[in-house]
Image (cartoon, rainbow, N blue to C red):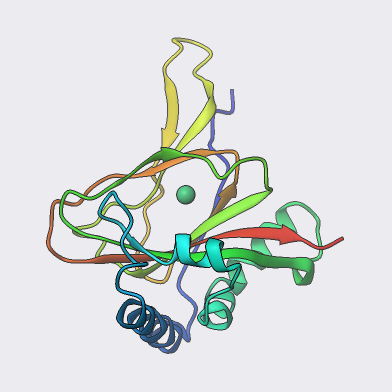
Length: 185
Ligand SMILES: [Fe+2]
């Protein structure tokens, strides 16, 4: 019986160091220019609310697209779709440290969502826990999976999938970029 939680987990692009520098530069610029907008009430530092309010796509869209390019190709291929039509629709960064975490949530019935691990220490930080909407058919327990990721990895999964980020309890910052994808017919 197949109990897997659907996802694609791609290794870092060979040019990752370049894309990382470009993304981090844009994130620091946003934090300097919009220090109050960058704070959400739960301790997460993010441009999510600013982007939604102002209907903007952040400056780091291009390096993110290049960094997740292989993941997009493998995801589209899995559905026999044209990878060139799978585009980034929504994009935001999330910086956390210490006890800060992102509780379980979904992105709704949008299609596909994902995470790019921009500044991430796999010895310290937690990845992303994916939780299946289906319970285990034998004992009724939750079916979940926390794919092992390292910096530069791109994780793509169905937007309906419940997911969460557990706290690291470390002062070392964890920076990820989250995104939704849209298939242009
Ligand atoms: Fe999310």
